[in-house]
Image (tube, rainbow, N blue to C red; front, side, top):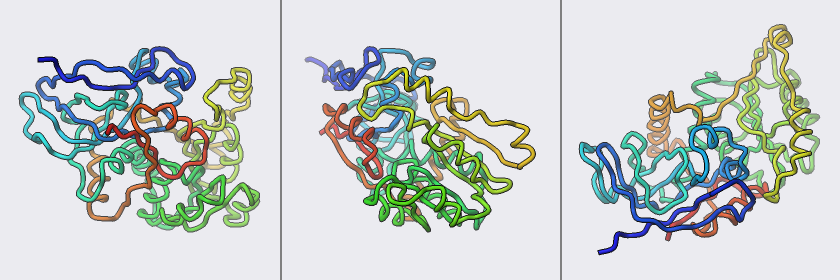
Length: 348
């Protein structure tokens, strides 16, 4: 009897959207300490497109090409390997993958798998781990927030931005959300933002200065060269700039412009430690894919987050779904900058 054929997206070599290829191969089998998951949904992140372009450092250094993108999935347990007692076939789960998530079957170490909270659909759950763990790590392992702090969150309607806004509000901080179009404002308020700046209709930094003349205790910036310099300049004394991406340096049509990329790299701010010392300002940065040495810390963060989703202190993000075989369309949609919350790929 022929073995069941799993489906997955593979990138044989970096390129445009056409580099995302759907193929079939026999289902994997779980070894001792592993769980086979029938994937119902996988999260789509901006980093997946950077992997496709060949610019994601951890994809090159930790895996190489060919590669299947995807950092997070949700589904049900199909089988367990020897020694696994935490899960049974049929259990609803959510999992962290570190590549490989764009598929309909996956084998993962049991430590990467978590019971899915009641009330979350597979699509909602698949959209949680990457963005909320990134936000949790920056806030609770790097920033150490205090009640009443004033934060500015760029790209606040996106996945990580939405998570930062929710976690900031949960920590008792006052979040000013920055968005690029008016249709995103209500979403940010729903996530817990006290104020929203729509930079398509309002001058960003003049408005930010009017709101907080003495600066912000924390600014979260995934834009890169377009805002980093001014973000640092608008920190309060003892303020922290937290960097987790460089989106403004990358294309919105899937095609790299190497000349522009090089020019933006040259213009990216280099922060002076003398200035940082004199002004008591700090620059922090995070990339979860390079934190495998802290895997137990991330598991702790995941348990912390799932408990708060279970009891209602955190809410799932709105999702926009695409079939697995339309991964290219999903990445193009995400890179357009027009989305709210999270995008996911559904396998059925």
